[in-house]
Image 1 (cartoon, rainbow, N blue to C red):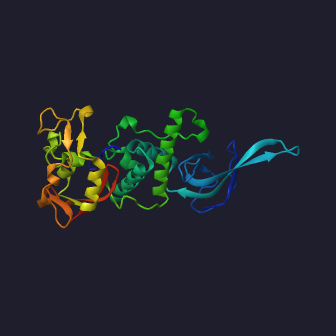
Image 2 (cartoon, helix red, strand yellow):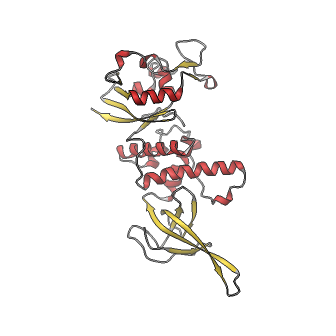
Image 3 (cartoon, rainbow, N blue to C red):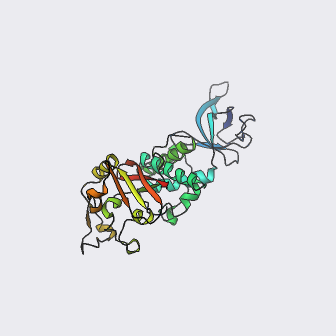
Length: 303
């Protein structure tokens, strides 16, 4: 996962494998005349019909079409239990594409998807808007839509691994747009191990006066002891940044950081089993809401 440091159900339609137009009818919010793109709840691409940009979660049923002799002459595809998502196909594939770069496995992607959705709601924007901005630190050149393909199109081990990751990313976006439980508990930001390693004094970036960006961007930082201990234990006692050539400004030539950084060890910064540190740069409080592996998630509170 990349560390974020910026301010960051309807009438059944029958179609053939040649995408014959579906039957008319269905719910008021579904454009059955033009069909759309279909995916399983697990993020598998099931197929499309018509020219619409609609996106559906559905179950795909394939039936053999036989002649009197009993020979199978064609197959008929039925998309059942359809539910339309409130996002068009272009945005859906883009969001999944960026989410894919932000997480290594499904649960990470799920957290990131919900966190991004919370930020989008906070700003009255869309998930696509947020992920295309510097809110996502994925380089612009890597922000690409996922190309729809059927499972049987993945032949090699590399293709199968990539397909699994793409399905996980779509599954995460589907969960958000299907009204899934917000596993992030309302978070809008996230950080990795650098947060505990850099703290208030050890960031390699002079523009933040060697503070981790969160300390430079928010007036108060709050973390419960339970979440802090979980985060710390998941990271360990030290972090090496040798490959990135980031240097601890306090130890010349060193690329290994003790974890946690000294600001988190000061008993004066712990009140009622909660880490509380105020920089007074503004009236915003950043409060930890969840920890997943080596990532901590935050919500923004305005005073």
